[in-house]
Length: 307
Image (cartoon, rainbow, N blue to C red; front, top):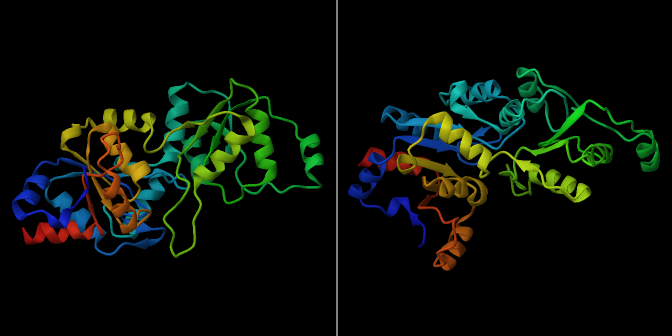
């Protein structure tokens, strides 16, 4: 079944679609904003959803900020948000370890956002910031003394990623009892220009290759996030809409949960991707075909206002 452009719906079809939704889960980067630049018309669309009585939640694979920091970012970009309406993967790392009753130390390859979320749960950590190689790689390996208190390695987006960090993570992960946690699988972030913007998944793949282990992944579209949001928000799948710009994370999450799905083309996925998807979507095993797509989220606002 091919995906349908939402603007092709009749007024009656669109009205029925909107009335069938109680809860909206939305990706952030590529749907609501690109890094620090708001996507035109998206704040007004979110506000309209709320005016119509829809519950709206921000579900992001970003791990560089804490939930309170995302609330602040939302406010700066004219979105209304509260902490309990936000799920980010830095927070999920802390939730995961708390559920495991983890009482050791975490080696982090990632950003301060992960560190702050761990600290909020009383979880000790180290590894944040640059780790520059002194001498050559042989000296780096010889001189490293693993911390015996480390019981987990958490990998997120790390702008200071380096050979010493790779070596330390691989050394800790020799022990099968040490948790190997990846915040999210995204190998690409929505780019602010035409350059490629590699994402967290690239770092995780490198460490998986070095350790011959697979990370437990927490973000979209993985089971841990699914279990968390379904329980946390008491969702009725048939009355929930997932909005995103990435088929492999956002839309696949929605499909796995039985949500309605809407793909927007302001981030990772392009019109060429949609055309290719529709050319091959006759395969019933293809789970990553959204129910609807549109150029940008504000198209939905225009349809609401005209209906």
